[in-house]
Length: 370
Image (tube, rainbow, N blue to C red; front, side):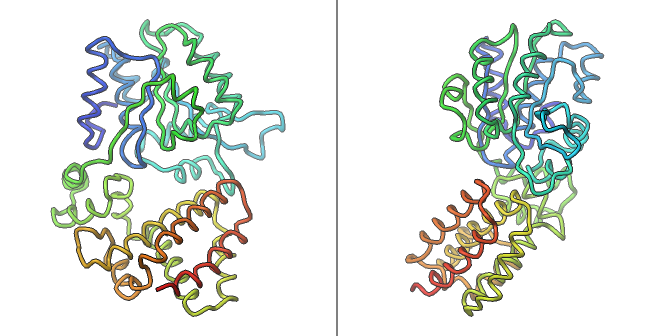
């Protein structure tokens, strides 16, 4: 794995290399940024750069991401086959993780959940994982160089794990580098945030996405330009746009159904809609609500009749032509607050039927506000 696998992000790459060249490499880094910006690919490419001692053996191991001094930590679930006392750790799913990262380093939590065989569960990083890290990192480097711990989504650590990791960061083993890949840093302990050097990763430039679509995927320049605008700095979303049966198509159908039923005040049908939404996994429910926020925002911006402000597929725009007038200055903020509250409730394991039925009923009132 090398820098060529990272889409864009030359500025971030140069900053990371500068830390090494100037002898200012901290023992704990945290790459923060939106989904699809390439934080994990950057972390892996940087780790491989640090571990590459120039020998054919090291290069071969790094190409397969099987270097003994490279350790991955990621959220896991508890399978029915596990004992009640067992605290799931990353090694329980090492095969699934390796298969996924060798396929692509640009993936979502939903894809990782599917790889683990998760159903309606929440993935976390347990205290058992921090114990494993202590054990692994206490060992001497097998190659005589750095030992690197890449922690994907540290905000999903439970409190026991976070406290143990804090102690490990405060007293790191010799030549150990922690690289955290974070999307919601505010959910991390302040004491952890204060002990890492944070590097904010921006969205990928549209030009870089467009170039990669043409060069890597063989997409025509016109289509690549449209997809890059829709992706809005998110390479994962750009790849989704290439899929005819993407998840967003289903989300759009559910969004249209909700708005039409709410406008028609069909309470019984809205209840059925909420039950259908409740049948999705929690991660998928949260992604739908995020899509809900985006589609509502785009519908609001559509009213200004400035195509540079709108990022929609043709099908989304076809719906917005008639729907946009129902999203205005009086209800756009209340709708956003309502949906953000639903995201919070779902994240806290609230009953999905109740959350989505309440959302549906309140949309009846909000769509009437002029």
